[in-house]
Image 1: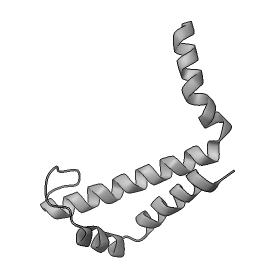
Image 2 (image 1 turned 90 degrees about the horizontal axis):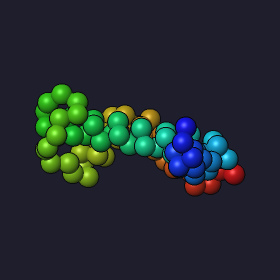
Image 3 (image 1 turned 90 degrees about the vertical axis):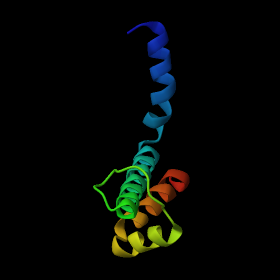
Image 4 (image 1 turned 60 degrees about the horizontal axis):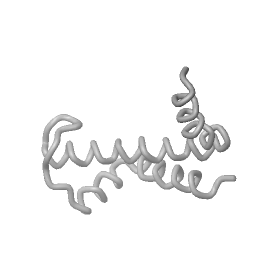
Length: 86
């Protein structure tokens, strides 16, 4: 590994290595938010998951959250761990 790549990798990976619980919380929040987004957009377009387009409203997000409460909870818990864990 060249010196520049090693320094760049060290710069990016050092904070993650110093705070692995925070990193896991951030990953959890991002993945859960992506699942919610894909589920809402798939419901808005009436097509398979991941289809682009469609109108996403707050009512659609609330309906999805009521049907699948674990994903919004995972977003909130992940963000709490990311911001408040030592």
